[in-house]
Length: 121
Image 1 (tube, one colour):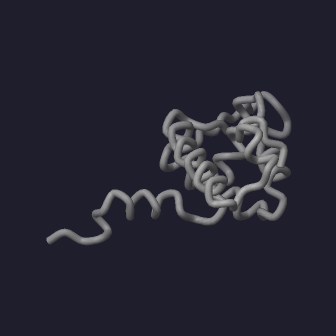
Image 2 (cartoon, one colour):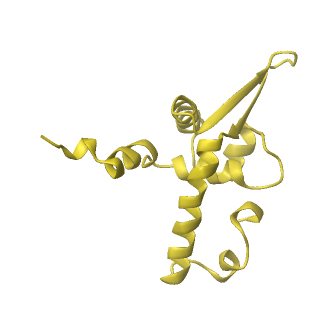
């Protein structure tokens, strides 16, 4: 018997539907640099706590949306995060959400005039 938990949409929402997940992906996408340090991500997401950000990054790393690079030649150890190919492809969904929001007047003029990669909001 087929159950809702076997549904592809259900599984996808379960994977990415937690608060902050899509916004973290978007923050990693923004700007010209591929890799971002923890505090750069944190500063871009003003209301997220360090504990929540750390937890979400670990979850996203586990499901291969984000990769973590550690450079132990620095003191303190330098950790950086970047989107994986899987994470980059998920941004297509975020872009569609933006288009939907702009179409139905949930966006703002500035948002409609720029790409998410160049966003400073």
